[in-house]
Length: 246
Length: 221
Image (cartoon, rainbow over all chains, first blue to last red; front, side):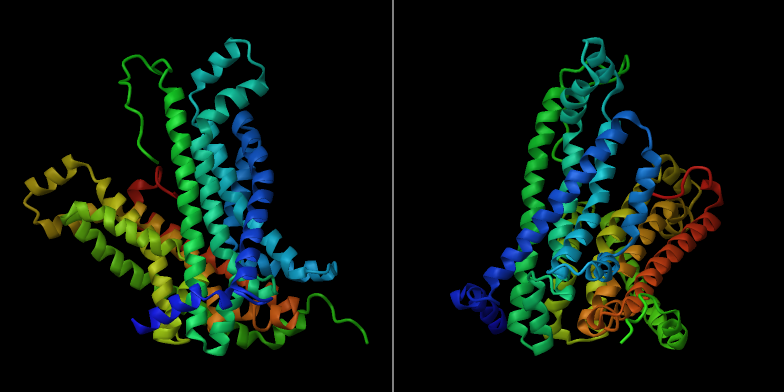
């Protein structure tokens, strides 16, 4: 109990947060790295998922590649790109290595979920959209995406939480983040520091998980409301009440 | 001074024994974690079968553990259990629980009520029914869970290099990244991916062998 008190005292102590090696800078590094990795991953994964989801072409190859990608551990991606980035002799090799590694790590859940979400959209609704004279682009943006949004956001949520959790590993290539105080604590035998920093990472990860969870639930309600007007898919099918939070 | 080549096969040949040792360490840590995790998960799943309303709380707790970053969980345990295999295994086991409990429960729930009724009518006791009817039917889903848990654990073991263990993670971080030595890094990465793939395929084959009747449908989840 006394130990937990010391950890909490260390976390709330302003002196722990200031300076060039304080918690403030490392939390900032953690947030920036996770955010940028997620943005890059979305920029690549979302168009790809939408394309294979809408047309169905190339889907097997993409999903297969994404599944293989998942077999490489986070540390593996860092290891793969570290020597390459160093060969290119950029200034902050640790940052770029981590950004590439975490972006790649975040792509598979978004691609597979976007694809699944698009495929699950009722074919009749898409045909209805076409019948109303919608162009393909409108079918995607006004029919498929709104209905697939909860599933797409579930993928983004998985990636976001996973990125926030793994970002600490950037420390092995001097990429900053809260992994720095954790490793300093481990190497220097400073239990208060390592547990304090570990608690902060855990809180950030849970906050990300719940934040995106709320977003996802809001989208689910909207999607259900929109789909609620749809005619029965098959004659005799019992209309289901809107599903609860996913 | 000539720059050393990007990839040195001679280093791998010279250190084959040490590399094999790291592979073995990696396999041991993974197997211990998955086996212990499976034993605990079976106990939890049977508890849930008896008291269904425990499902929510158990999934909630194991789900929260699953969301804790690996480096953070290792770090939090260090003050209590030190830089030891015990620290690593507590964390690794707790990561397997969510996947395993969920799949075991889903597997047991996939057994149709008519099947349970037929087994009971044939005079099987609750224990016989579980071992002879329900578990075999649940097996494909259960093994699918073990496959995911194993592949995840193989990846997580590499991170334990940061608390002085690590198996193949030692090759990636300690002799690799820390010494700017790509050969060691790529040896560690490739072997850990191969290990994960090998474990995954072996478990899939095991599942096919144990449940010949489901060959056409089951497979991977």
